[in-house]
Image (cartoon, rainbow, N blue to C red; front, side, top):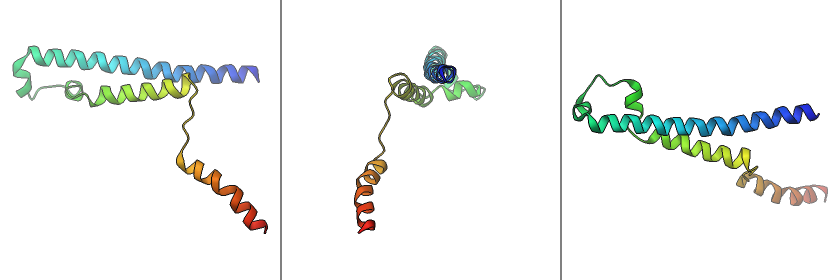
Length: 103
């Protein structure tokens, strides 16, 4: 039982650490591509750009990585468990439905 809990903790920590490293890597690649793009004025019209350069010309990928890392840190590291509104409504309805069915 103790070994299973230790393995679970390692998996949980590996998840948020990987998300954070991925976000830093995406930020770093975005910075490199953007700096290269601003120093090379002809690159805006260059059709020979690699897929990596095209992916990181816009901030969508780094922003998605930031959001994923923040979610992983919040849930995995800090232990926050989001409450879905459906579960709240279900819990509110369950006592009344069980009492009305027994009547």
